[in-house]
Length: 410
Ligand code: GLC
Image: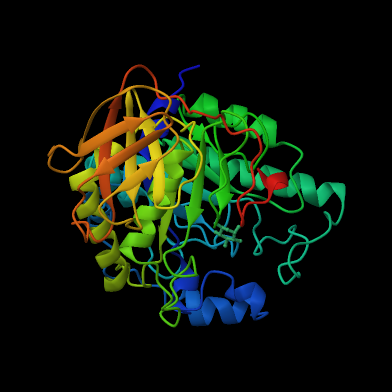
């Protein structure tokens, strides 16, 4: 079977888009469940007022591209069950209500046209379905009501996926959100998906076979060599939430990119468009600033191998081929010491301009010298170090403990 994992492993950065009827509420994507909103009220207040009147997925795709992102993943259906495509499986969809049109097709076409990879998020759970055990549960139901309802529900979600995998051209990622209670036919469905979409990559939230794993709102590379992706919010919410103004800065995002690159993974960073389909200005600004930084320095991060190096006081060391990239987030003055690199150092230069950096290698320590204070890039200054051979650590990491990482979760 064709396998496209290579593009994913070098992608580094993708855009996650949480958008649906819940966006009308402006309080995130869980409102139906959190506020016990009855479905008739949800339909009247939110679904009917979800008009997508300024929906222009080409703008989303262009923004993603300018931000340096290589793929885009849209919530085709979230937990509320409202399908954003023309589906025969339920009348609760965007053709019958609200926007009165298929929203997935223009998305797929626009993203593809910009040369980016197309991903569809699909929630296993569907609170709107009569066989789903409890839409208002805290937080998830314990089990299915009975075997029959589980089987019916499994048939239903499988049909939805067959539609999405058959009617919209090439799909590059199926991004499952997990279903609680679990499905018993995950393996069968994943195999079917791979038959319908050879080369598609599936995440690990609906059993095997899968191609990559996720960590959510954290950067925790798996212990194994499994391809992986961290998904993160830009403020603290996935769905549109204008009252949540606790935004990460462009610098925070670049720092996350350096962290995922160090682990050889990707960052799937979320935006929450308004119900009309526009991405909030603040979110776009952050992404554009990240894109400008990546334009200057990005080749240090795309396609990174998993770094053999440990943590440092000033930032992150990423690696690729015969290079070590020094990402400086906290200055150390005119001199910066790295006590990690075993190889002979051949050259050191700024990634953005190619200008040489003075260095001296003495025993286990590499000193970068005569650095300007302050460093010239207020987000992150990046220096490439060329070494003899493949980068190797002086002391391999044998025991891992960094505050904030729980070893059992790795
Ligand atoms: C959680 C949330 C969901 C969100 C997802 C993103 O599973 O329930 O709302 O879409 O995280 O990974």
